[in-house]
Image (tube, rainbow, N blue to C red; front, side, top):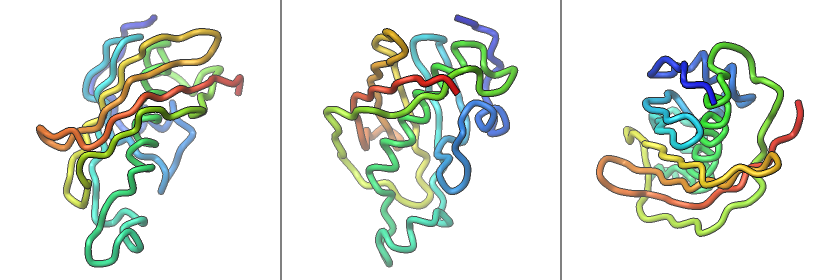
Length: 154
């Protein structure tokens, strides 16, 4: 695994590594990386997010499924950056979320929150990764889960 990643990883590099685009790109920056082990990324939650128009009017709440998606995107960045993807395109693989287990939602997330995404790779076997993930706002864990992502040649 490559260790030559300059931190923080900016949005331009993230866009080279992930196929997602507005309004579905849910990671703004990578703050820390231990290649093949752990990533700390962030999502700045803005009142301008399109889902706040209907979820919920007068009381904007980030949907839990989008917090899980942000964690899955951070998982993809962990794999891509660990393989040295920061210096080029997406590489040979795309990863798809195939399973979510033990999802818990402890608090709501709203405009102005900084969502800190922490993902640890538990194991990688035959192109499938098992990840332990949690999202925090400040000192509070707002969500956690186990994710399984499967690679497919692009």
